[in-house]
Length: 321
Image 1 (tube, one colour):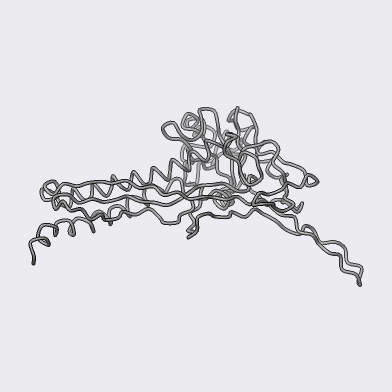
Image 2 (image 1 turned 45 degrees about the vertical axis):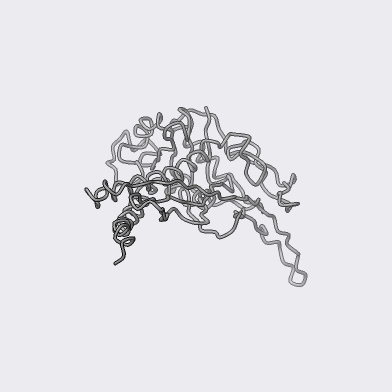
């Protein structure tokens, strides 16, 4: 074995431990946000998130003449992934003193940095639901009172709203309460698809409540203490039996300065929402090895190439009191 190989062998022993820890810890950190967003892989500089569309209700048939059916289209959202990367240097001495411990710490910290980068991007997507600088394919903020129901097509990559199809709202201004949640659930039952059919959205039996960190105590109070993330069989009582949403699951959308502000909340269909709220990866988070001339330093590079975005607004109703 040459001298250069002896000098760098410790790096080769270190990397596999870091990579294994990174992969495991990254998945753990991302489990919460994956309740409300879906991960997709796409090897392109942009990702087209297609909205709903269809041909509407069938016309009567008179036995001889077929009536043509025109498609009503949804809106297309373009998501543009971006690269994220940094460098973490590990000194030979620290690795030699406790190779496994140092590797696990480096892997865990790198995984946390990457996971939080993706997680914060998702939180900001929800937190910007009312921000006019972040518009969806229909030209509206994610939370809006005047979403166009359908598109007439697109010109130069921009969808054109069909004024004849009307509009719908997925924004209310009520403070979090049982009556506000049930009102939003009823509101969702009136949504229609671009082709005018009932939008099969279930914010009751399949509902998920999204709350700010400040509203979590209220969510526990009205949904039940065991309703966070995983539904459980909850005890029934006269009081709970009178509460139509007792047992509804909830999740906290907020951390640090990102996500929902203190009074904001939302209700969604937990199956449909991940279909329209996306994390798109050109390359999923990983740790890369960097070759350095210095034999005393091992460098790892946490890396990801991703973007976030939202499509159809019907699976979620926001409240901004």
